[in-house]
Length: 139
Image 1 (cartoon, rainbow, N blue to C red):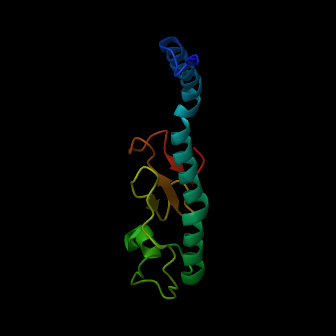
Image 2: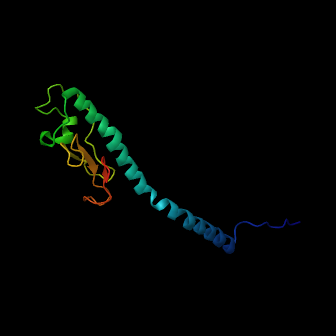
């Protein structure tokens, strides 16, 4: 006696239906996730500016009585001792501060926007001073 042969695989129609369903799901989900990577980069830059680098600058200021000036090398004074630093207890940062787009953070002391301490900002996605910059002052 012979046993009936069962179904051994999927038909072309079934495979096409699965591909169409997966394609539909991807089409619905991808637009929601598309802008998230840029949002994450902006959030990382804001965290660096308002917390990470700011803390290192405050420690430098506590030790030396002033923030490093732009003439002293700016943020590089947080890694290597400048000649004018009398009580340098660094390094205050382990590595050169680079924004999420791969460029160095911009630092000015005394600041033009915050004249009482310093301006610290990232040039953002486009790499030029524009509306997408992430700054430590209100725009």
